[in-house]
Length: 308
Image 1 (cartoon, rainbow, N blue to C red):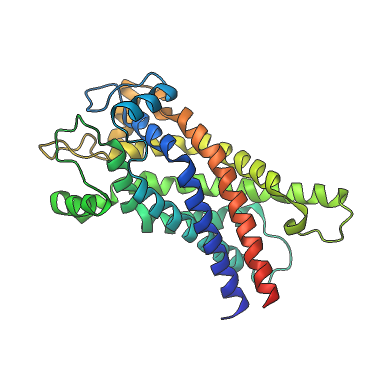
Image 2: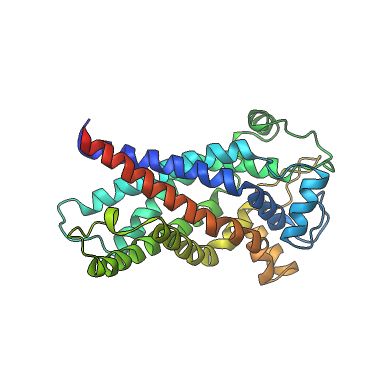
C-alpha cells in the first residue's frame, strides 16, 4: 500500500473513532433536539416540554429513552465521520496535486462540500431510522419499531425503499454546514499555527507539534457555532420530513417546500430554530471532542507509520 493510501485510511480511522466518542457522550441532547425540532405546536403524540432541562427530566422519568436511537446514531456517526474525513482528505489531495502552495479557502470549501454530499447520499437511511426511533414514545398509536433493523424492514415494507431517502433534499443543503465548519476550522487553524509557531522556540511549524488538545477544542467549537447558526433551519426541515406517517399512511409534510410554507405560516422564523438550545449544548462540546480525538488519533497513527 502506498503512503498516500495509508494516509487516507488513517484519516478515516481517526474520523470513525472521533464520531463514536462524540455520539456516546452527547446522545441524550440529540434526542431532546429532535423532539423540539418536530414540535410545530399542532396535534402531536409527543409531550410538550418547557425547556431543555425539563425535556431531559421528563424523558428520563416517564420513558427512560434518553438513548433512543443510539444504535443508528453510533453507526451513522461513526460511518459518517470516517467517510467524511476520508472523502475530505481525498478531495484536498486532488486539489493540491502539483501545487506546492497551501490550499485556498475556496479549495477547502469545495473539498468539504464534496465530502458532505457523498456522505449524505450514503447515510440518509441511517439518519431516518435514528429520527424515527428518537420520536417514539408510549403515546404512539402505531406499532413501535423494536430496533434499528426492525425499523428498516418495517419502513421498506410499509412505505417502500424510497422512504429511506426522505429528507435527502434538506440533507444535501446541510452539506453547507460541513463546508462552513471545515473551512472555518482550516482557516482558524492556519492562523493559530502561524501565531503559535512565531512564539515557539521549536523549529518545526507543523500543527502536530505546535497545537495541543485545548487548541483543537477551541477550533472545533468556534467553527461549529458558525456553521450551526447558518445551516440549522435545514435540520428542522429534515427532521419534520422524516417523521413516521399516521396510521392511515399520510405523512405530516409532503415535501421540503411544504415544511417551509407551513413552518413560516404557523411559527414564523422561530420555528426554523426550534431545538437550537439543546443543539448548541450538544454540538459545541461535541465538535471539540470530535476534533480532539481526531487530531490526536491521527497524530498517533502517523507516529506509528513513521516507525515502520
